[in-house]
Length: 231
Image (tube, rainbow, N blue to C red; front, side, top):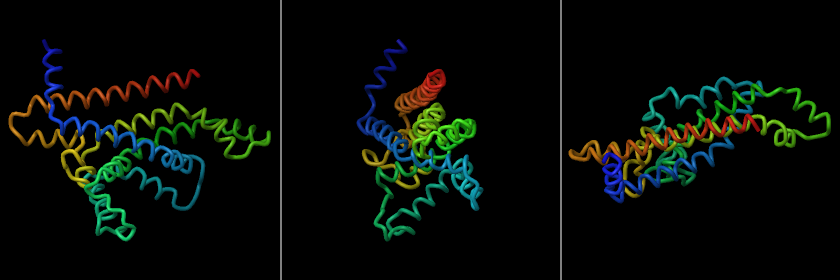
C-alpha cells in the first residue's frame, strides 16, 4: 500500500513540479559540463604550481563553502544582473535559466576542485618525469599518464558537483528567483509548497525524489571510483 500510495503521489504532481525536476537535472548537467574542465585546471594549479596569489585563489575557490549561499547569490546578482558590474557585456543572467546554471556551478565548484586536487597530489611525479624523458610533451604526459591516474577523483568530482548543483537553493533563488516553468528548481518548488497549507504530499514526494537522486549520485560516485581504481 505504501508503494501504491507513493506512485499515486508521484503522478499527482503538477506540471510545474515536473518542470522543476527537468530544470534541476538540466542545471546539474550543464554545471558539471562547464565547471569540470575549469575545476580540473584550478586543481592542477593548486596542486602543482607555487605562485604569488595562490592562497588568494584557493580562498576564492572555497569561499562558497563558508559564505551564506544568499551572499553568493547577491554577489552574482550585482555582477551579472542587467545593471551589474558586468552589465556592459550584456550578460543579463538574472531571472534566467542560464543564471541558475551559473549559481549552481559556483556553489558546486569547490566540491569539484577538491577531489581532483587530492588525486593530483597523490600522483607519483616520477612517472610523469619518466614519460617526459621518453619525449612526450606536457600535454601528452597529462593525457596519457596523469589523467588516467586521477580518473577516480575526476569521477567523484563530477558526481558530487552534479548532486550539489541539483540541490542548490540559496544562491539560485537569489539570482534567478522562483518562477514556475522558467527558473523554479526542485529546492525552490519545495520552498514554495511549504508556504501553502495542504501541500504535504507534494512536498514529501519532491523531498523523496531529491533524496533518491542525491544518495544515488553518491553511490554512483563510489562505484565508479572503485572500478576506476581497480582498472
